[in-house]
Image (cartoon, rainbow, N blue to C red; front, side):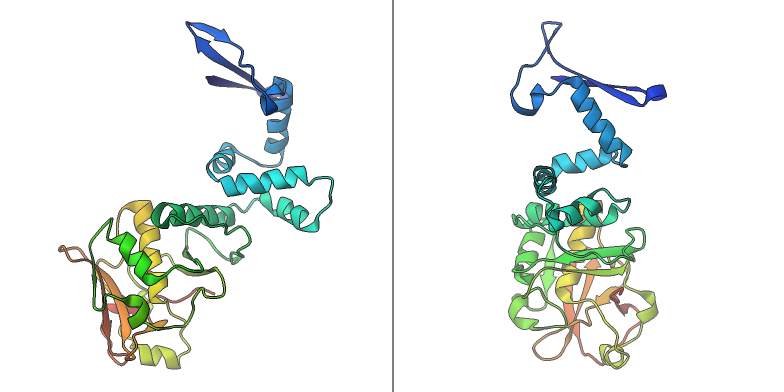
Length: 283
């Protein structure tokens, strides 16, 4: 099957021809449902979307994201019902800010690919100041555990832990997803935030510093590796000040390029070092 799209710039008209090549000849495809629409109707539909700012990459997102496709279908089918929730979704669906939809779609894909989980983050509120050029956005899903994350990581690369059962040993976290999914932003730094070098966790706590948790740091590693096949914290270590081991020690994470893989260690909350740095939550 092939599709041929012809755009007539002077009149901004889109024509679509569809057919099946068979023995060098083009045969018209006869199908039911939406395929019964005329070329003019399909072209007019695409023209209407184009006039509202929809581009080809948006259509690609619609094809690759079944949850988004379902939502769009609900908007169309509920057009006459004047459902306020549906109208609100329709209003934001085609806005100029695509970053929110894209990061949700990215994490839905990651949770499916890495953990086999079908997640719908469409109702999750992404901070207005989120900018993918400046921030890493991490979505923590309800029900996911640190042990699950490590198990899936080990299918892709080496992981070394000070304590194997992270769910039991790291039992204090400033944030968790027990009551629902949440999103958190960090500065888009490959190495942990330099401004917090040589600051111990105890001092940062007095400063009301809001730092990354161990689970957020592990998911951040997955996000970065999934996109780039590279790793974070090659030269330094992230001090996960948002978490504590059961004995009060603080988790720290780094990538050991000499072959050790991703290392999850720990240190005293009063210990500081030039290469030991927190990642601050961007709020």
